[in-house]
Length: 165
Image (cartoon, rainbow, N blue to C red; front, side, top):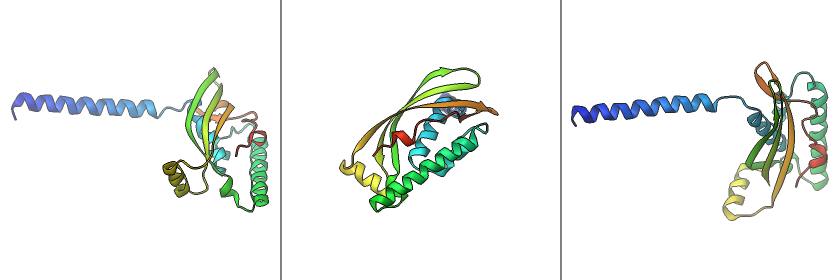
């Protein structure tokens, strides 16, 4: 391997490292679309961490709404003879469209496909054998920027009235 080849190899590797660092920096930005998608995904997975994604101004009101929603899901599952895990949905093909955006507020439309996710193994098997019903989901999520982080606020969306599956 000649000196020219070595210099070329080092230049290619160095360029790749620089691009990788650039992509990591851009990918790590907090955007309203990402916050809305993460909240919606956690909400339909019945993950109680969604409470951490609520703005502090309305957190108690929205926390009550989410707790009521989770309680209603528990009751619905019990009526069917199952526990909460049966009602979990996994969102795929998530698409976000920003409807409005300014410095402190945003309104984002979230579209996704949802499939029952009782257990991660069930999801893999269902995907392999193409079993299970796929539901379409469209929600509009309201967000505010708090301390440089986008959080869901002001009636995140009508989760109680838009139960799928």
